Image 1 (cartoon, rainbow, N blue to C red):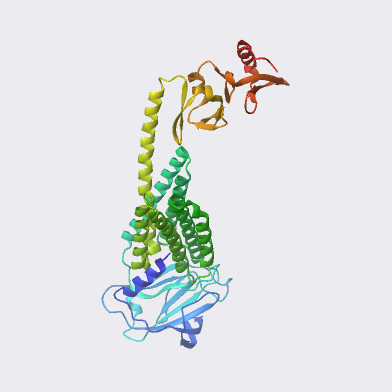
Image 2 (image 1 turned 90 degrees about the vertical axis):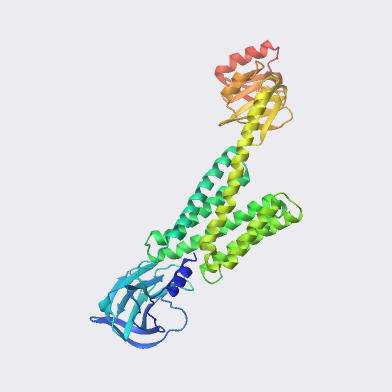
Length: 473
């Protein structure tokens, strides 16, 4: 997102720059021996080829020092370049209309041969047009100039971004697994946070990895802004749910309003920074309230958010480009490790509880995402299958989800429990009677709704009920 700014800053600071004079705009045509320009005047404001064909001219001094140079262009535009009337190449095909233009790449490099330079009086001419961007940008040209070739390697920044992206996507998978095991809302929120950040990291590196056409760049910026907004909403939801649940909806509503208003801010860099700052700021408020109330863990969260804000203010150019990913990874990865450790401890506690309960035949030990509960068998009215789980319906109206299959429970439960359907086991002590309709049977329970009886199990049910002297209704 901020890479256009970083690119411009990098180009400005590069050695061997061919000191360009102020740009001029001209009327021009592509003649047989090079561009023919007329009515040139100093350029005012930013270079903006959107919705028009733009001819630019600048006087250059030959760069000092050894080594090759090139014209670098980072722009939402097609372009063509000449030096001293000699064509250096074209990026797409600029034109005076959308039908005449062929979109070029967002980044283009035009190497300059040594023979193209003059001792003095060098003239650089650039023709640009942009008719296919889709959205209008405030600064469509991120960089334009002559610099040492090639640019310094960005391998370190790319490696850091790739490492963060890999860690975030792995964290998203881990939290997804935890959500399946625990069915907790916080793990699902954290999985979404990590996944959104990982996808955004991929979008950030897309420009370096793929030489895409310039219309893609605008929608890439929109995607980055949208993903940042989603991450901020998830961050607020997670922190507020944990430390200030009563204010969660109000804070999300405020954040959503800020995000909507950010669309009218100039430039996608400012849009993205605004939504990220709003999310971190509101999350910090929730954590600050929790610190004031002495909520456990609030100090660490507030401290982490404060450090991120401080780093962002100290290095604004890298806030969204790199610090954001490191922040997201530093937030979700420790939480993931803590969740994994807690999951392991819960499994150990469940195993211990199950072992202790083995000698208590009058109880059923129920293992669920919330822990282990011992339920007296006499309180169980029925057990109903629910995919890989079993739902225990109790005499007091409660329903517990048990991490076990009906086939296993049918073996473990005593003879007072009978399998009456492929998905139902009943406690005969709670059966009032049975009824038949069109060859199908149903159990009439002393409390709760009726339960189905499989046709092939009806004789066994009738025999069991008659053995207990239950009267047919």
